[in-house]
Image (cartoon, rainbow, N blue to C red; front, side, top):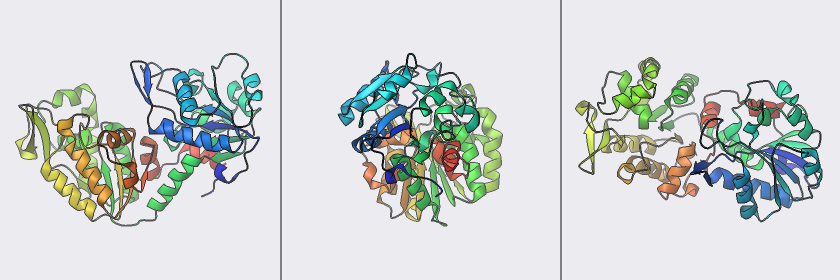
Length: 396
Protein backbone atom coordinates (compact mmCIF):
# COMPACT_ATOMS: atom_id res chain seq x y z
CA UNK A 1 0.00 0.00 0.00
CA UNK A 2 1.46 3.38 -1.01
CA UNK A 3 0.95 5.02 2.36
CA UNK A 4 2.99 6.21 5.33
CA UNK A 5 1.85 4.84 8.69
CA UNK A 6 1.97 6.92 11.86
CA UNK A 7 2.50 3.70 13.88
CA UNK A 8 6.02 3.52 12.39
CA UNK A 9 6.95 7.17 13.04
CA UNK A 10 8.72 8.71 16.06
CA UNK A 11 6.09 11.20 17.23
CA UNK A 12 7.66 12.48 20.44
CA UNK A 13 7.39 16.25 20.60
CA UNK A 14 5.57 16.38 17.25
CA UNK A 15 2.36 18.38 16.81
CA UNK A 16 -0.12 16.19 14.92
CA UNK A 17 -3.39 17.20 13.29
CA UNK A 18 -5.55 14.07 13.43
CA UNK A 19 -8.92 13.64 11.70
CA UNK A 20 -11.06 11.09 13.56
CA UNK A 21 -14.76 10.18 13.51
CA UNK A 22 -16.53 11.00 16.77
CA UNK A 23 -19.99 10.93 15.14
CA UNK A 24 -22.31 9.15 17.58
CA UNK A 25 -25.96 8.85 18.55
CA UNK A 26 -27.49 11.83 20.34
CA UNK A 27 -30.58 11.36 22.52
CA UNK A 28 -32.22 14.40 24.07
CA UNK A 29 -29.12 16.48 23.43
CA UNK A 30 -26.86 13.96 25.21
CA UNK A 31 -24.32 11.82 23.36
CA UNK A 32 -24.49 8.02 23.57
CA UNK A 33 -20.81 7.02 23.19
CA UNK A 34 -20.33 4.22 20.66
CA UNK A 35 -17.44 2.18 19.26
CA UNK A 36 -16.15 5.01 17.06
CA UNK A 37 -15.71 7.36 20.00
CA UNK A 38 -14.06 4.62 22.09
CA UNK A 39 -11.72 3.34 19.37
CA UNK A 40 -10.57 6.79 18.25
CA UNK A 41 -9.96 7.70 21.91
CA UNK A 42 -7.64 4.66 22.06
CA UNK A 43 -5.67 5.96 19.05
CA UNK A 44 -5.32 9.36 20.74
CA UNK A 45 -4.13 7.70 23.95
CA UNK A 46 -1.53 5.63 22.08
CA UNK A 47 -0.08 8.64 20.24
CA UNK A 48 -0.19 10.87 23.34
CA UNK A 49 1.61 8.19 25.37
CA UNK A 50 4.45 8.42 22.82
CA UNK A 51 4.79 12.16 23.51
CA UNK A 52 2.77 13.62 20.63
CA UNK A 53 0.80 16.87 20.91
CA UNK A 54 -2.57 16.28 19.27
CA UNK A 55 -4.98 18.63 17.50
CA UNK A 56 -8.16 16.62 16.98
CA UNK A 57 -10.65 17.31 14.18
CA UNK A 58 -14.07 15.61 14.00
CA UNK A 59 -17.69 16.29 13.13
CA UNK A 60 -21.07 15.48 14.70
CA UNK A 61 -24.29 15.33 12.68
CA UNK A 62 -25.32 17.51 9.77
CA UNK A 63 -26.45 21.13 9.69
CA UNK A 64 -30.19 21.28 10.37
CA UNK A 65 -30.37 17.86 12.11
CA UNK A 66 -31.04 17.35 15.83
CA UNK A 67 -27.66 15.67 16.35
CA UNK A 68 -25.75 18.64 14.91
CA UNK A 69 -24.15 19.69 18.19
CA UNK A 70 -20.87 20.84 19.70
CA UNK A 71 -18.11 18.33 20.50
CA UNK A 72 -17.81 19.49 24.13
CA UNK A 73 -19.40 16.27 25.46
CA UNK A 74 -17.16 14.20 23.17
CA UNK A 75 -14.10 15.95 24.62
CA UNK A 76 -15.31 15.15 28.15
CA UNK A 77 -15.70 11.48 27.15
CA UNK A 78 -12.17 11.35 25.69
CA UNK A 79 -10.77 12.85 28.91
CA UNK A 80 -12.52 10.28 31.12
CA UNK A 81 -11.74 7.36 28.76
CA UNK A 82 -8.03 8.14 28.39
CA UNK A 83 -7.25 9.88 31.74
CA UNK A 84 -5.19 12.39 29.74
CA UNK A 85 -5.16 16.20 29.67
CA UNK A 86 -7.81 17.07 27.11
CA UNK A 87 -8.47 20.69 26.17
CA UNK A 88 -11.42 21.87 24.12
CA UNK A 89 -11.61 24.83 21.77
CA UNK A 90 -14.30 26.58 19.77
CA UNK A 91 -13.36 28.04 16.38
CA UNK A 92 -13.38 31.54 17.86
CA UNK A 93 -10.41 33.31 19.42
CA UNK A 94 -6.69 32.63 19.13
CA UNK A 95 -6.33 29.00 18.03
CA UNK A 96 -2.57 29.33 17.41
CA UNK A 97 -2.01 30.32 21.05
CA UNK A 98 -3.89 27.18 22.18
CA UNK A 99 -1.83 24.96 19.87
CA UNK A 100 1.46 26.50 21.03
CA UNK A 101 0.34 25.97 24.65
CA UNK A 102 0.15 22.18 24.22
CA UNK A 103 2.67 20.03 26.11
CA UNK A 104 3.79 16.55 25.10
CA UNK A 105 1.00 14.02 25.65
CA UNK A 106 -1.77 16.65 25.65
CA UNK A 107 -4.83 16.74 23.41
CA UNK A 108 -6.67 19.74 21.96
CA UNK A 109 -10.09 18.83 20.56
CA UNK A 110 -11.45 21.45 18.16
CA UNK A 111 -15.22 21.92 17.95
CA UNK A 112 -17.41 20.36 15.24
CA UNK A 113 -15.59 20.87 11.90
CA UNK A 114 -18.97 21.36 10.23
CA UNK A 115 -19.38 24.63 12.16
CA UNK A 116 -16.76 25.98 9.71
CA UNK A 117 -17.83 27.54 6.42
CA UNK A 118 -16.49 25.57 3.51
CA UNK A 119 -15.87 22.31 5.43
CA UNK A 120 -18.47 20.35 3.45
CA UNK A 121 -17.84 21.91 0.05
CA UNK A 122 -16.79 19.40 -2.58
CA UNK A 123 -13.40 20.81 -3.59
CA UNK A 124 -9.97 19.43 -4.42
CA UNK A 125 -7.34 18.95 -1.72
CA UNK A 126 -5.38 21.96 -3.02
CA UNK A 127 -8.49 24.19 -3.01
CA UNK A 128 -9.35 23.13 0.57
CA UNK A 129 -5.73 23.71 1.66
CA UNK A 130 -6.20 27.43 0.91
CA UNK A 131 -8.96 27.72 3.52
CA UNK A 132 -7.82 30.16 6.26
CA UNK A 133 -8.48 27.79 9.21
CA UNK A 134 -6.75 24.86 7.47
CA UNK A 135 -3.66 26.99 6.77
CA UNK A 136 -3.62 28.41 10.31
CA UNK A 137 -3.59 24.94 11.90
CA UNK A 138 -1.20 23.40 9.34
CA UNK A 139 1.34 26.21 9.83
CA UNK A 140 1.60 25.17 13.49
CA UNK A 141 1.78 21.37 13.03
CA UNK A 142 4.30 18.74 11.90
CA UNK A 143 2.11 15.93 10.57
CA UNK A 144 -1.43 15.21 9.39
CA UNK A 145 -3.05 11.86 10.25
CA UNK A 146 -6.31 10.43 8.87
CA UNK A 147 -7.61 7.77 11.25
CA UNK A 148 -11.17 7.17 9.99
CA UNK A 149 -12.14 5.09 6.97
CA UNK A 150 -15.71 6.19 7.73
CA UNK A 151 -14.98 9.74 6.51
CA UNK A 152 -12.48 8.89 3.76
CA UNK A 153 -15.22 8.98 1.09
CA UNK A 154 -15.80 12.69 1.82
CA UNK A 155 -13.83 15.36 -0.07
CA UNK A 156 -14.18 17.68 2.93
CA UNK A 157 -11.64 20.25 4.13
CA UNK A 158 -10.73 18.43 7.36
CA UNK A 159 -10.30 15.14 5.48
CA UNK A 160 -8.21 16.18 2.46
CA UNK A 161 -7.23 19.83 2.98
CA UNK A 162 -4.12 19.20 5.12
CA UNK A 163 -2.44 16.69 2.79
CA UNK A 164 -0.94 19.32 0.42
CA UNK A 165 0.49 21.21 3.41
CA UNK A 166 1.86 18.52 5.77
CA UNK A 167 3.51 15.07 5.63
CA UNK A 168 0.40 12.86 5.81
CA UNK A 169 -0.10 9.48 7.44
CA UNK A 170 -2.54 6.62 7.93
CA UNK A 171 -3.67 6.47 11.58
CA UNK A 172 -3.57 3.43 13.87
CA UNK A 173 -7.27 2.59 13.47
CA UNK A 174 -7.30 3.25 9.72
CA UNK A 175 -4.27 0.96 9.36
CA UNK A 176 -6.28 -1.92 10.90
CA UNK A 177 -9.16 -1.19 8.49
CA UNK A 178 -6.87 -1.21 5.44
CA UNK A 179 -5.14 -4.43 6.55
CA UNK A 180 -8.52 -6.17 6.83
CA UNK A 181 -9.63 -4.88 3.42
CA UNK A 182 -6.38 -6.02 1.84
CA UNK A 183 -6.88 -9.49 3.34
CA UNK A 184 -10.47 -9.61 2.06
CA UNK A 185 -9.30 -8.79 -1.45
CA UNK A 186 -7.07 -11.85 -1.37
CA UNK A 187 -10.18 -14.06 -1.67
CA UNK A 188 -11.24 -14.67 -5.27
CA UNK A 189 -14.19 -17.08 -4.91
CA UNK A 190 -17.16 -17.91 -2.66
CA UNK A 191 -17.39 -14.27 -1.54
CA UNK A 192 -20.76 -13.55 0.05
CA UNK A 193 -22.21 -10.10 0.68
CA UNK A 194 -25.02 -9.87 3.27
CA UNK A 195 -26.73 -6.54 2.69
CA UNK A 196 -29.61 -5.09 4.70
CA UNK A 197 -30.47 -1.87 6.47
CA UNK A 198 -32.70 1.02 5.48
CA UNK A 199 -30.54 3.21 3.18
CA UNK A 200 -31.37 1.81 -0.25
CA UNK A 201 -30.28 4.76 -2.42
CA UNK A 202 -26.54 4.34 -1.84
CA UNK A 203 -26.68 0.58 -1.37
CA UNK A 204 -28.27 -0.18 -4.75
CA UNK A 205 -25.54 1.73 -6.61
CA UNK A 206 -22.77 0.09 -4.61
CA UNK A 207 -24.25 -3.41 -4.97
CA UNK A 208 -24.47 -2.85 -8.72
CA UNK A 209 -20.84 -1.76 -8.84
CA UNK A 210 -19.67 -4.76 -6.76
CA UNK A 211 -21.54 -7.22 -8.98
CA UNK A 212 -20.23 -5.51 -12.10
CA UNK A 213 -16.64 -5.48 -10.80
CA UNK A 214 -16.95 -9.16 -9.89
CA UNK A 215 -15.93 -8.50 -6.27
CA UNK A 216 -18.86 -10.53 -4.90
CA UNK A 217 -20.15 -13.97 -5.95
CA UNK A 218 -23.39 -14.04 -3.98
CA UNK A 219 -25.53 -11.31 -2.41
CA UNK A 220 -27.99 -12.14 0.38
CA UNK A 221 -30.50 -9.30 0.69
CA UNK A 222 -32.55 -8.42 3.79
CA UNK A 223 -34.18 -5.43 5.44
CA UNK A 224 -35.96 -2.68 3.54
CA UNK A 225 -33.51 -3.32 0.73
CA UNK A 226 -35.07 -6.74 0.07
CA UNK A 227 -38.59 -5.35 0.12
CA UNK A 228 -37.70 -2.88 -2.63
CA UNK A 229 -36.29 -5.67 -4.79
CA UNK A 230 -39.55 -7.62 -4.45
CA UNK A 231 -41.57 -4.45 -5.04
CA UNK A 232 -39.65 -3.84 -8.28
CA UNK A 233 -40.62 -7.37 -9.36
CA UNK A 234 -44.32 -6.60 -8.92
CA UNK A 235 -45.02 -7.65 -5.33
CA UNK A 236 -47.27 -5.44 -3.22
CA UNK A 237 -46.64 -5.30 0.53
CA UNK A 238 -49.94 -3.80 1.62
CA UNK A 239 -49.32 -2.01 4.93
CA UNK A 240 -45.71 -1.15 4.02
CA UNK A 241 -46.46 0.33 0.57
CA UNK A 242 -47.50 3.78 1.79
CA UNK A 243 -44.28 4.02 3.86
CA UNK A 244 -42.14 3.12 0.83
CA UNK A 245 -43.94 5.75 -1.27
CA UNK A 246 -43.74 8.40 1.45
CA UNK A 247 -39.95 7.95 1.73
CA UNK A 248 -39.53 8.37 -2.04
CA UNK A 249 -38.14 4.85 -2.44
CA UNK A 250 -40.58 3.98 -5.27
CA UNK A 251 -38.47 6.15 -7.61
CA UNK A 252 -35.60 3.69 -7.15
CA UNK A 253 -37.58 0.66 -8.36
CA UNK A 254 -36.38 0.75 -12.01
CA UNK A 255 -32.76 0.48 -10.74
CA UNK A 256 -33.70 -2.52 -8.55
CA UNK A 257 -35.52 -4.27 -11.40
CA UNK A 258 -32.68 -3.71 -13.85
CA UNK A 259 -30.05 -4.97 -11.41
CA UNK A 260 -32.04 -8.10 -10.55
CA UNK A 261 -32.68 -8.97 -14.20
CA UNK A 262 -28.94 -8.68 -14.91
CA UNK A 263 -27.65 -10.58 -11.84
CA UNK A 264 -30.59 -12.78 -10.83
CA UNK A 265 -28.38 -15.84 -10.33
CA UNK A 266 -26.20 -13.98 -7.81
CA UNK A 267 -28.92 -12.20 -5.79
CA UNK A 268 -30.83 -14.15 -3.10
CA UNK A 269 -34.05 -12.45 -1.96
CA UNK A 270 -36.14 -13.50 1.06
CA UNK A 271 -38.55 -16.40 0.58
CA UNK A 272 -40.61 -15.15 3.51
CA UNK A 273 -40.96 -12.24 5.94
CA UNK A 274 -41.95 -11.89 9.59
CA UNK A 275 -44.86 -9.71 10.72
CA UNK A 276 -46.56 -9.01 14.03
CA UNK A 277 -49.94 -10.62 14.54
CA UNK A 278 -51.74 -10.64 17.91
CA UNK A 279 -48.49 -9.50 19.58
CA UNK A 280 -46.66 -12.56 18.21
CA UNK A 281 -44.17 -13.10 15.40
CA UNK A 282 -45.66 -14.72 12.31
CA UNK A 283 -43.89 -15.85 9.13
CA UNK A 284 -45.61 -15.19 5.83
CA UNK A 285 -44.36 -16.41 2.45
CA UNK A 286 -43.81 -14.12 -0.53
CA UNK A 287 -46.90 -15.65 -2.15
CA UNK A 288 -49.05 -14.52 0.82
CA UNK A 289 -48.34 -10.83 0.12
CA UNK A 290 -49.85 -8.23 0.42
CA UNK A 291 -50.33 -8.17 4.19
CA UNK A 292 -52.14 -5.74 6.48
CA UNK A 293 -49.25 -6.05 8.97
CA UNK A 294 -45.94 -4.35 8.07
CA UNK A 295 -43.06 -6.73 7.23
CA UNK A 296 -40.39 -6.33 9.95
CA UNK A 297 -37.79 -9.09 9.48
CA UNK A 298 -36.75 -11.96 7.22
CA UNK A 299 -38.67 -15.19 7.89
CA UNK A 300 -37.53 -18.68 8.95
CA UNK A 301 -37.15 -20.17 5.44
CA UNK A 302 -35.00 -17.20 4.45
CA UNK A 303 -32.85 -17.58 7.56
CA UNK A 304 -32.23 -21.25 6.65
CA UNK A 305 -31.41 -20.38 3.02
CA UNK A 306 -28.98 -17.60 4.01
CA UNK A 307 -27.29 -19.84 6.60
CA UNK A 308 -26.65 -22.49 3.91
CA UNK A 309 -24.97 -19.89 1.68
CA UNK A 310 -22.91 -18.55 4.61
CA UNK A 311 -21.69 -22.07 5.47
CA UNK A 312 -20.22 -22.40 1.93
CA UNK A 313 -18.50 -19.00 1.92
CA UNK A 314 -14.75 -18.31 2.09
CA UNK A 315 -15.21 -14.59 2.74
CA UNK A 316 -18.26 -12.72 4.05
CA UNK A 317 -19.07 -9.01 4.21
CA UNK A 318 -22.06 -8.05 6.36
CA UNK A 319 -23.47 -4.53 6.08
CA UNK A 320 -26.81 -3.63 7.63
CA UNK A 321 -29.32 -5.62 9.72
CA UNK A 322 -31.94 -8.01 8.33
CA UNK A 323 -34.90 -6.34 10.03
CA UNK A 324 -36.12 -4.17 12.88
CA UNK A 325 -33.73 -5.73 15.41
CA UNK A 326 -34.46 -2.92 17.89
CA UNK A 327 -37.67 -4.81 18.72
CA UNK A 328 -37.23 -8.15 20.48
CA UNK A 329 -39.91 -9.75 18.31
CA UNK A 330 -37.85 -9.08 15.18
CA UNK A 331 -34.29 -9.75 16.32
CA UNK A 332 -34.25 -13.32 15.06
CA UNK A 333 -33.14 -12.65 11.45
CA UNK A 334 -30.21 -10.39 12.33
CA UNK A 335 -29.18 -12.52 15.33
CA UNK A 336 -29.19 -15.87 13.47
CA UNK A 337 -27.37 -14.51 10.42
CA UNK A 338 -24.69 -12.82 12.55
CA UNK A 339 -24.32 -15.97 14.67
CA UNK A 340 -23.95 -18.10 11.50
CA UNK A 341 -21.21 -15.75 10.25
CA UNK A 342 -19.46 -15.84 13.65
CA UNK A 343 -19.50 -19.65 13.64
CA UNK A 344 -18.41 -20.05 10.01
CA UNK A 345 -14.81 -20.70 8.97
CA UNK A 346 -14.93 -17.78 6.54
CA UNK A 347 -13.00 -14.53 6.80
CA UNK A 348 -15.67 -12.11 8.04
CA UNK A 349 -15.82 -8.34 7.76
CA UNK A 350 -18.71 -6.43 9.31
CA UNK A 351 -19.53 -2.80 8.62
CA UNK A 352 -22.19 -0.11 8.95
CA UNK A 353 -23.23 2.06 11.90
CA UNK A 354 -26.25 -0.11 12.64
CA UNK A 355 -24.10 -3.24 12.73
CA UNK A 356 -22.13 -2.09 15.78
CA UNK A 357 -25.39 -1.19 17.56
CA UNK A 358 -26.88 -4.57 16.61
CA UNK A 359 -23.89 -6.50 18.00
CA UNK A 360 -24.24 -4.66 21.32
CA UNK A 361 -28.03 -5.07 21.42
CA UNK A 362 -27.85 -8.79 20.59
CA UNK A 363 -24.84 -9.38 22.89
CA UNK A 364 -22.70 -10.91 20.12
CA UNK A 365 -18.99 -10.21 20.83
CA UNK A 366 -17.15 -8.35 18.05
CA UNK A 367 -14.15 -10.66 18.65
CA UNK A 368 -16.05 -13.51 16.98
CA UNK A 369 -15.51 -11.84 13.58
CA UNK A 370 -12.29 -11.31 11.64
CA UNK A 371 -12.81 -7.54 11.58
CA UNK A 372 -15.61 -5.16 12.57
CA UNK A 373 -15.22 -1.99 10.54
CA UNK A 374 -16.36 1.36 11.87
CA UNK A 375 -17.21 2.48 8.33
CA UNK A 376 -20.53 2.03 6.55
CA UNK A 377 -20.98 3.80 3.24
CA UNK A 378 -17.22 4.32 2.81
CA UNK A 379 -16.60 0.60 3.30
CA UNK A 380 -19.06 -0.36 0.55
CA UNK A 381 -17.65 2.37 -1.70
CA UNK A 382 -14.13 0.96 -1.20
CA UNK A 383 -15.29 -2.59 -1.89
CA UNK A 384 -17.09 -1.49 -5.05
CA UNK A 385 -13.82 -0.13 -6.41
CA UNK A 386 -14.53 3.55 -5.85
CA UNK A 387 -11.56 5.77 -5.12
CA UNK A 388 -11.92 7.48 -1.74
CA UNK A 389 -10.76 11.13 -1.65
CA UNK A 390 -9.28 10.75 1.85
CA UNK A 391 -7.06 7.85 0.81
CA UNK A 392 -6.04 9.49 -2.48
CA UNK A 393 -4.93 12.57 -0.52
CA UNK A 394 -2.73 10.37 1.71
CA UNK A 395 -1.06 8.84 -1.36
CA UNK A 396 -0.17 12.27 -2.70
